[in-house]
Amino acid sequence: MGVVHTFAAPTAAPGGLSVLTEWRPDYVMIVVTALVAFGYLRTRRTAATRGIEWARRRDVVFWIGILATVWTTNGFPEARSYQLMWVWMAQELLLLLVVPIILMSAQPVSLVTAVHGPDNPIACALRTRTLRFLGSPLVSPVLVPVLCMLLIFGGLGAFAVSSVPAGGLVHLILLAAGVLVALPLVNTDDQRSSLAVGLSLAVGFVELILDAFPGIALRFQTHMTLVHFATDRPAFSPVPIDDQHIAGGMLWVVAEILDLPFLILAAGRWIKADARDAAKIDAELDARQHWAADGEPVSEPSVDRPWWLDDPGLQDRFGGQKPPFRPAE
Image (cartoon, rainbow, N blue to C red):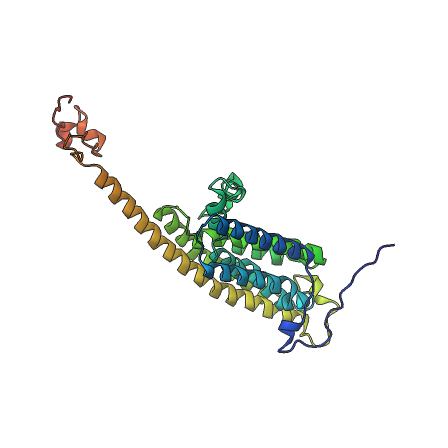
């Protein structure tokens, strides 16, 4: 008969130091975090061996993101998430909106591309149809309210609190979704056009409004949506429905506040994309010179004209003129 390892939930009310002293292992996220950290270390060592320059501040940001992941999935939020609904809600929001931004700000995808080339497995995975769809500017901002609705009313939250492994799987899903949302906003190699980024910003404003609905619904709900938090509650915890209302208020307010950095990042990305597109157009126009550097004439660039101005049957009607005849050089 195998030994079943159980972890006793804290019986005292959380205090000031409990955020650092209380831990509960999430084995799924321990394995995932260890693999990500090992992969980064190995890639970083290869980059150093090949003489590829990489900013030390990015290393610092990455390890801060790893520590944030470990604490969120194994520290105080994990230790208390099965007791208090508001702590559980805070944990899910951290994994969806905060931790991915920290990790992706370190540019790990750019590091892998610099070391292993543009056809590395991560880049190839991001170019698949499914991930391209989920990461598109019309879809990725909407992932946040959709996942929040699934957590509260769609059964995903009930599955998450049913067991520690199930909770770890949901944590991985939320973190992956957060990466898809954050990557286009902070990735320095993102080459989307200014139109696409502007569309993402517009959808982000709509998503800012949509984020309020799950929190409002949870805040004013008159019955428990997650039965897990209605039973076996510790003596120090509030009434179950009050705990749910706190969680709903947190989702309502915190999700709206955390959306602001996303909008700021999207606006900054839009400005950079517009400047990049303008520089590209200027370069193309400069290349279209009437005379080459050695003095020999080159073909004149085609002029964009409405088709009807060159149509013989419509020239008189619209006042168009036929372009002058140019003999072949």
